Amino acid sequence: MSEIVSDAWKRYLGQLQEHPLRTKAITSGVLAGCSDAIAQKISGIKKLQLRRLLLVMLYGFAYAGPFGHFLHKLMEIIFKGKKGKETVAKKVILEQLTASPWNNMFFMMYYGLVIEGRPFSLVRSKVRKDYPTVQLTAWKFWPIVSWVNYQYMPLQFRVLFHSFVASCWAVFLNLKARSVAVKLA
Image (cartoon, rainbow, N blue to C red; front, side, top):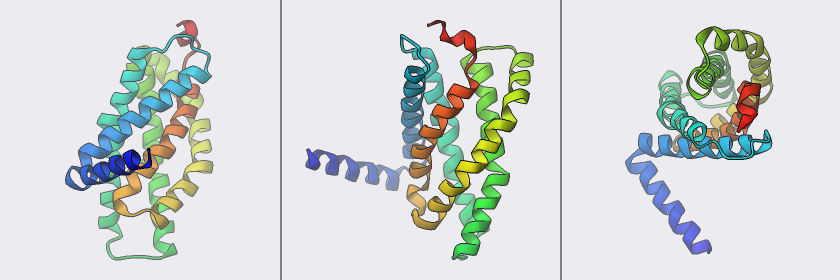
């Protein structure tokens, strides 16, 4: 069994080296799908909502993975050649003041408009109500994750690490963003 896992990991690393954007996008999509399946189960949905699951995977594949890929490349450009705890702190602060608010807002809008198919006015109202709590909670959790990511993860693994932790965070966001009407399934 360990040989199978070892071989799969080597193949994954090869794909990550040869096709980094594609590999990170697929990884993010798969992890987003896993987190949604878990969120559906936890929230009491009896039958897996496949459309919802695929739309969450699309979010991970088309947005979250590529966004993370380019965010970390941009951070390396901005802080080129700079190392140490002060640089890590600056990266964390920059990420938390820019990417974090945007990503949480974008996910909540995507979830309401695309996944739930609700009208913009209702989504806007829900975001206005829930966004401050979501963002404040994010600022309690993500700075620690970002610190670990920038301090200890090699560049090529940052999106993988972030996507894995984000799959846990997405369970929280899914449960927060989900409307009561979705529970019908």
